[in-house]
Image (cartoon, rainbow, N blue to C red; front, top):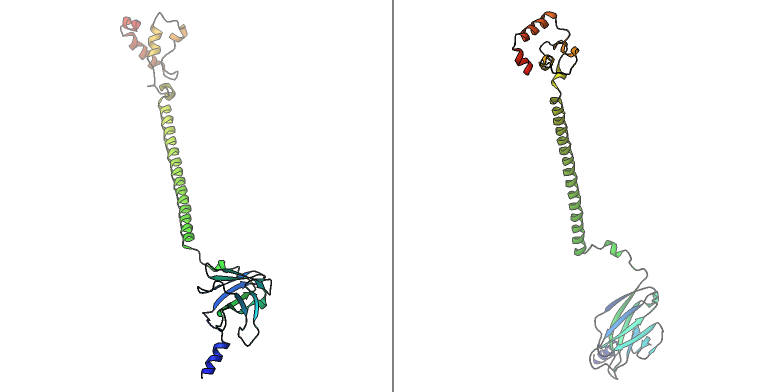
Length: 254
């Protein structure tokens, strides 16, 4: 039983931790970070592909200070206790299981960290199209929408008020025009409203002026009757007789 446990210990890599998955894209570069414990800063580090055991030849593309494949490089950061494997120009055959190894002195077995490298052929370019926008973008979109809606509503209200003002102004102008027309109608002289043949439409001033001896008017004016030519002779004689009965001095003074 003891012999079986010894064989398992020799064949199986020692110090195996949880599997770390790393993804890369075809033709691009990828980094594999391998942490280690304190006290191994000066130990040799390497990357082993496939199976790493004492019974099989190890496929080690890169180790500290040398590289079998120039696309692989190793950088050891002893302060952070992490060594980084850089792989450029990824190829489909680069995918698979790797082991980050830290060499220890015999008879102690090396320490390993299992790495699963996935090589993807096409980068998911449309991934951002199906993602939901962030909260900030949603808030900005809502704010802009409300702002545009408020501006549109304000313009609409201003247009309505302007149209109402125009209608009110037109009504005021129409009222003023009507009042002016009415005033013009009331300012027409009275003689323009005289209807031909109206016997009651007469003016006494021509009579008084015709009896004034100081007037410069011609005799034809004095002889012109103050009535319309359509009036009868009897009415004219009656009116003239009545005027003679008045005081001549008063007529002359007037």
